[in-house]
Length: 601
Image 1 (cartoon, rainbow, N blue to C red):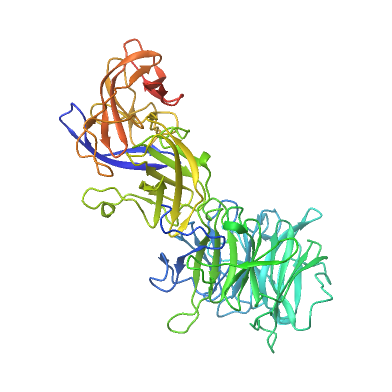
Image 2: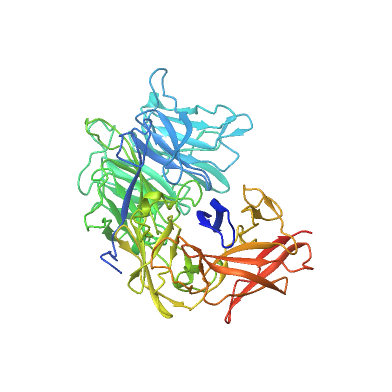
């Protein structure tokens, strides 16, 4: 939900109502690029100051990523022996979980991590693990906040056998849940049942795999286990980078080979594996494979394994993330945008040491005409000088509304953080941006009829969509989708209960109240195009308003803010208590049905 902070003088009131918070929105083709293969890279978190939006000293050797359906991202930090948590924009969650070492002293080296939904893998009696980690020093540790909030507990320790776990997956076979750990040193996928006992010996075999290759990672993608193989170094302790050094196989959860999917070619010590979101540019639902060896991300047909492309940035260069590890699609909650792919890397720094990076990849904005909506009603109906909400994918890389510095000499901004929109070649005025929604003000001079709409996110543009522009498109802003944003004469909100954190009270018959909306039409005098409103401008045509089906007196109707209309309406005598429908009529156009105010005698 977007809340505007409004500063205006109400008509026929001597008092200035300052900083009235009203939640008004619910949740040129220029020189932008509409390319088949162009993606935005945004650094969200790093331990290196000023490299990313956020700095976290614990993000060193960032490796695996896991998340539940609603949780933040959990990142395995091999360089610090911990797991750190981040929200969808990279904000640091104040919980750091230590991953213990195989032997006392020092720190663990976490690599892979998974979220456990089963009741198995107990950390203590009756306490199932929430998150599980494997380590390069041969352990598997489990975490339950009720057992030890700050520490995972070692449940498997195969360090004496020389195990070096470099990746971890979880899956179900015959109604039983198993862990699958890539043991790079031994060249095996080690399987553990829900009691952490070894299981399925002798599985995960590929007789055609060349000598010297070992499982580097294993990921469960859609119920199948994808195993990425890399070439072992002389000591079999780590991967040997090199062009063509890699294979990807697909197994079922019983460890039986289904197919050799990818051989050599564009692989170079592959580790990151993910199925791209449907909105990921031209590569929706394709297989993404990230190379540790050269830092590139390659796209393959998920069925045949055929190479499709290497991801490029907005200037057409291959995206390269040194020491690239995980690829993870957001969960749509605290763990990121479901239309984006997130990554980790153990990047080198200016000092040449091991550092960390957590970032995001986005495709071009993806929208349809049906997603271009009136910002008050969230229905069709667009007019000049009307707020519009576009709810789509990849619309922005940041989330924010207006700041003071966005206004220069009273002019409304036509871009926020690199996000803009166009109506038939004219720039719209941007009021709010986020990956899934932008709010914009239609230029006042937009002609009635078909309009071509396009959005741009930092050089990547959406396809053109066609919408119909009307002369007027009246709609009330609401606080919760139903209750109209309305105030008493003293500026306090009208409502029955705490719909918002701001205190509210009902209106009563005979009271003159203020209703807020958008799309009510032309004013006299007209407001200069694209400028802040500094003085209320009356409507040319005053709307007809009914409250509970009874005509109400409209004392004033006009523009009091950018795209913001105010109607001063007297609640008719005899209006019953409760939520009462309010409808505004301008010509033949009516405001949305179901919009109400709360009345109490």
